[in-house]
Image (cartoon, rainbow, N blue to C red):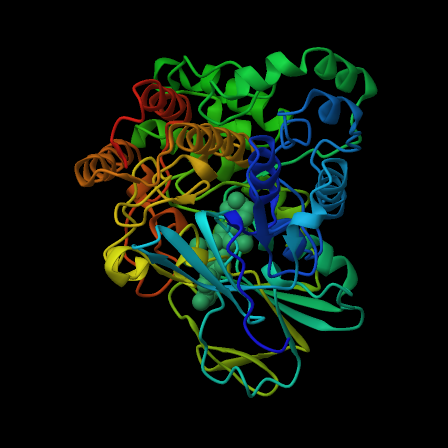
Length: 536
Ligand code: NA7
């Protein structure tokens, strides 16, 4: 490229071509806006483009983890398994891009570096790594909640002679682990999903665990055509139900939410847990309505899972090490396929790094407590700088040139997780302060895209130039999110919901654990003429 290009004809720049960016583009075109998407990857898909690690799968059932905005799309697409694999989800996303002819609006291989608001013209200037400079009236950050990889800074990282990979940036050509000794650092969903698969291929696997995970079996299986037919016959209703449940699940929400664990005697309670365990998946935590509010109730679920770990893992010392003693559900639960069984293999070792963190990498391996564990490859399954990481990595400046990072120095401040005071016409899809990762992400994305689209349509129709939240509405909203989180047990562990996994990140609970109430609030705000927003 010879020099910076400018383009003043753009109404809307969308950053990111994952599920959120694609639907936003489709929706914006539906109301006649000229929208342009910038995507750093060489393909669409966002998180599903990057997370190609062995065993990568969604922990939400495929019939739920799919768009509901278009009846023909949901009828024609055929999922094959209960939980979709990463390649299958990526095929689906590619299909969406083609089906709605979105590709000509997307510029791939182009990372957005900055987005600055120009007050005199009320336009955003967006600059990309490839040297393009475009201006747009609106910017939608569809940058994802789990897209900025958290790679721990460990001394000696340059000394290690073997290969190092992060699960969230997996090489597209794949990695051959055969005949190799592999270290896996991290036991969240990515570790829990990849460890059994890597163990099947590698010569030896050493798992470095800081906090043990609670994992519920997936019981993944091919989808039953009769079930698919039944769901598709009632899909519209399913999607409506999904928007009314706390988790954003339609048909798989399951009953039981009205019952308290502490109201049942231990045998009856155990029977409910057992039934949920055999059903599999994240709905385990929906067994009772007090599990995330009462420590005593939570302890009963945690004890049940610890019992399952002890049943599966042969060596009692290893079983104890794998058994969490924290609040169950405080970190996102994992959905596994053979995770605990993997530790019965003679070629898999578990190293506890909770009390003695990884000291350094050496040329030959990973050093803990003075002992070097020799390996040929290291996999960091160490998660993400969640929810704010991708936004803070872009130089976003609002009124008066104030950087978003400065405004958010003590933690993210938003109204409804959709907008930030001082940053007019900038929107965040599934931003901090919205249910996002605590609901089915696709349902949360659809709700946000549709709400933003309605607002943009109204602004264009009414000749409104700028929209941003009132300062009071924003601070009241932040207080509300904190209040809701404070009455739950979510503060009982060092989770990425709280920013606790990234050294130095402010500890603020970012997602809102109340999807139906949230949706209702958004609807009411819109119905009241966008109450709490300043429309200029
Ligand atoms: P997670 O859930 O954040 O898990 C990351 C894991 O890596 C977790 O066990 C961390 O321990 C561990 N970790 C992070 N840094 C270190 C260091 N420095 N040393 C040792 N261990 C470390 O990320 P995932 O990618 O697995 O899953 C993210 C989401 O994707 C998941 O919730 C689903 O929604 C899908 P910690 O718990 O912080 O002690």
